[in-house]
Image (cartoon, rainbow, N blue to C red; front, side, top):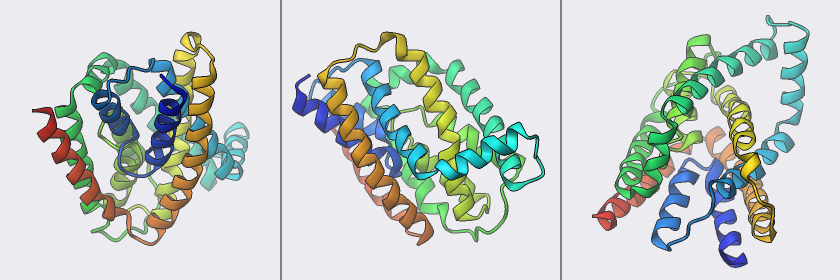
Length: 251
């Protein structure tokens, strides 16, 4: 790949990683349409760049979760949150390891990507139809972990699927937003460690990393405002449009 292509892929990853439009779906579409074939490690490293954004934005919450867990303070809000993260991560890992090869094969199948985008759009459209004011529960963490596992499918937005599920279950929007992004930390760290032995550091990787980080920070701040202001469902129309276009062009 050229440096320009690395920068473009990094920017796309950063913009779409946190917005509910599926970063993996966009990367699959761009890579297929333009004949790009980056290593899996390149895409994983772009994800790692956006993960650093999570550490910067949520560092106070991360410290509180870790402290509550290691002091066995499981009755506190952050103690319970640590258990919810573990439960959700186990569900995600089980799905990821079981269907890893199947989901990986979908990256070259744009029809599947298009259908998955339509599913994401439908989740987003109905996500804010219910009053959301209850606390997170163990069952909620299971359902949200399930959605994060299925979001390995390109076209299923991780943030869209997890936040939508929480909102559909009636969880307070601020709480489900925070949980969704704390839950992704073990998943991305696990994927990064899994592929780290195959990473070959070069300028392409560095450029993609920088662009992914910068645009990832901007998109996360934007998503935070959209969820709080109940405008999350606006992205449904974008996902439907892109999904239909992708299916048509793949035929």
